Amino acid sequence: MVKVGIAGYGVIGQRLADGIQRQEDMQLIGVADVAPTLPVRALKESGMPYNLFCAVPDLVKNLEDADIPVSGMFEDLLSQVDVMLDASPGGVGAKNKELYIKHGVKSIFQGGEKDEIADVFFHGYANYEKGLNKNCLKLTSCNTTGLIRAVDSLDRAVGIEKIAITIIRRIADPGDTHRGAVDLLLMEPIPNHQAVDLMTIMPHVNATGLLVHTPVTHGHIITIVATPKKKVTKEQVIEEFKNHPMIRLVRIADGFNSNTSLFQYGRFLGNRRGDLYEIAVFEETIGFSGDDIMFAINIPQESVTIPESIDAVRACMGMQTDRIEAVGLTNKYLDMF
Image (tube, one colour):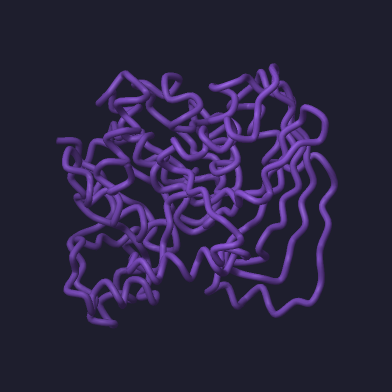
């Protein structure tokens, strides 16, 4: 049983905790944070299903004054785990890594950290083998994670030579009121980092793209134009997406006509916080420009990286050496088939 700890109990950390707790071959020892934030207060009110450790000893009084039960300090948690999933704010992870090395603990970082923090830039489906038995892995961002799922699915079926993407990006997570209310579409220069990151994971695919920040909070939309190495039919593309456990093929005609419709559907399913682990491909957007494949996907930014984060635990701990077996177990315990 691999023992796992989580640093940061925010947007990603709370979802990582839920995901790890569902893995029958992993044990969640606890989560670490520094303040009685709303997720931490909710943790207490729900009966403390996860042990909470204080990440900064000097700040433990903040938690105690809010009557939040504390099971120990950060290094107490590190002394009990095999691997840490770091979901702390960007830049904090680099400082945490020094403690992970001190305690001989393996570490996995989210997309907000700089690439050089890790031995391997990791994606469970596209380069699982490169993460095997490494000490430190870094996940791709939410957009890149979902983008790679879709491109990797087609690449393994027919080969993909190049892609061009447009990302219509939500401006902030729902709780990020500090970003303010905006009324604009903000352009970034090409190439966006998601295209560059995809080429790091899949160096045989030539990628470029642009990004537009939009004043919404629920989900990103990415349009993709992919050049296959051999001709493929629309039916073949649909079948590939249908067969992928982390891709949900949806129809605009059935009401899936927006980013919000997917967020709502997660709530209708009764998923905690309305989370969806899958990206969605809008079936009616699948088409061709010459031989190039065109389609659009929805990225549930708060939860999409959770399966690949768990895959990273399997890889760095050498729990499974076979990619299909590893992602299959993660998906099974997350009830994704």
